[in-house]
Image (cartoon, rainbow, N blue to C red):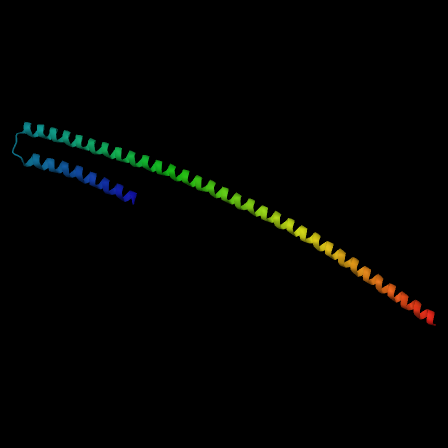
Length: 151
């Protein structure tokens, strides 16, 4: 959109200058005046046209400078905002990572505790089974002794 706006201004300026010049020429040539008056008026109109052109050029230059400064200011604001958002996203990512590491450590510690408890339970079950086997052997041994005594 910006280039079109610049083209429109440029076309307007050209049209204005050409129209002013042609209007001045037409007024001069169609007015009944002497050569000296005509030259004087041409000089005067030329100076007016030059002054008007300088004024328009100066205004266009000021406008262009203002637009450029505004664009630079906006670009700097956008850059600062992008950097701020990037830093914020980086902080959030670090917080999530730190939280994840903490959760993994908690789960790992809990898993170790569960494994240790299960080892203890297995050891108790093994001891109970060994005790049971020993009791059965002992009972069989008594039975065998009784059977041998009877025979």
